[in-house]
Length: 76
Image 1 (cartoon, one colour):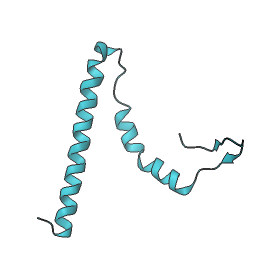
Image 2 (cartoon, helix red, strand yellow):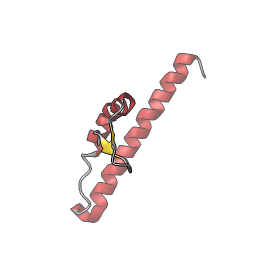
Image 3 (cartoon, helix red, strand yellow):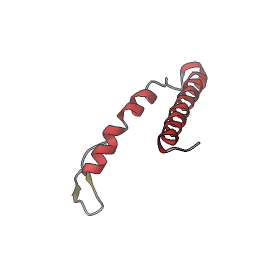
Image 4 (cartoon, rainbow, N blue to C red):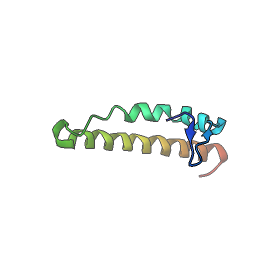
């Protein structure tokens, strides 16, 4: 969760620019994986199958980006 926190010495730590950037960069993935249903549906099998499909799609996206980057820098 993005927000100020209180450390061990009861001092408030503000959100840094890097933390905010990473948080907003990851919002898309958080929304996609928030669509996984709760475990109580079909004894968790529905959540397992949808999570497995999501992981497969993430792997495909990362592989495609790596392939594109390899082509851009001239790797075979």
